[in-house]
Figure 1 (cartoon, rainbow, N blue to C red):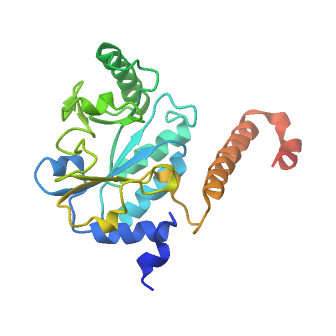
Figure 2 (tube, rainbow, N blue to C red; figure 1 turned 90 degrees about the vertical axis):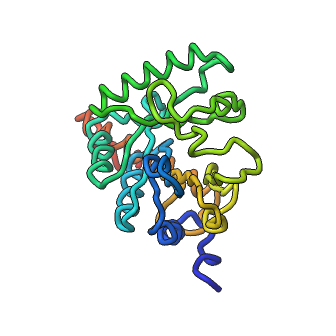
Length: 252
């Protein structure tokens, strides 16, 4: 039995490393993609900045440059906290790129004016909080209403659009640009290693989906995310509230 068949679908770092091994000779950034063939490696961060930093370190270990997208109005994490900001900036030191994961769930369908307003506000927050220029973005949850995917522009609101026509083919049966994503702990559009025949491919690997553990059930995966967030919150309360120490171990 091959290593891939044993690890496929485990969402373990061992499986992820097999994917990276296949990408070593590929051009993996959005800037590269504008010049010809590519296999873009993209990371949308939904819940956990720690896992993003870990994935960035693994990418660097394999000599691969990737692009990380962070939300600025997420209820799950604060990208501007001292600790998280340092972790995000460390990704740039590793050679990766960082962009805005543009939250649009509250934007009315087909309201382009509201979309532009929201992008402008979130871009300002991104640039002020991280002290970085916002040169690229990805939409957060463009489905089930896919109207933003129908805006077929590589550059939108002055920034590179990860769903632009040079990087993403808006079709259920793409002919030239393959898109694959690990959303909800499953490869909805096929495993990357089963689609290497495409000369152009965009891989979305959410750092939140991956860990050292193998064969986690969906429940186990979700529990691990919640447990990590819980530990972080307990640490924060401990640091901010002097009277918390006697109760800390009881709450854990």
